[in-house]
Image (cartoon, rainbow, N blue to C red; front, side, top):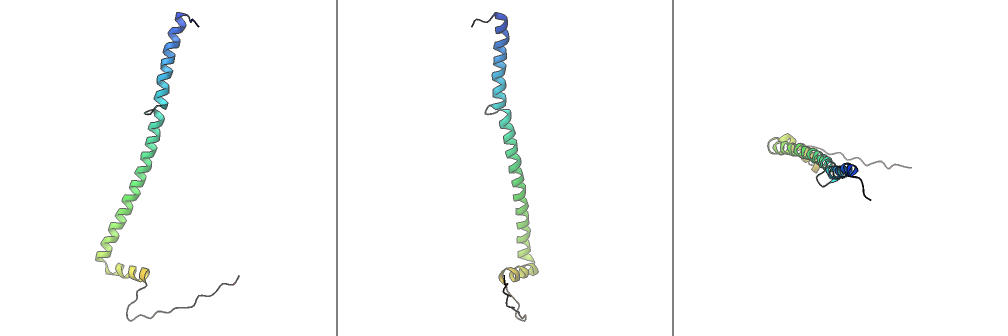
Length: 99
């Protein structure tokens, strides 16, 4: 396996270049890992934006619950079924569906 000197001059640098290229693409800090990390960052950024949006909605709801009596009354009526003292509630029996 004695290669002539001229061939060795091409094979050794080509091997080193292939080795470096392999780790540049597939290594722990390679291009594929960078792409994967960027995708993860984009997902996390979108989740963060959703969480901030939800947080802002909750802050507005807190302010409305503290200051807006009509909103508070509508929540009490809808969620807890509360009524005023002068209101009449009508309950109708549900019809049974026949197959």
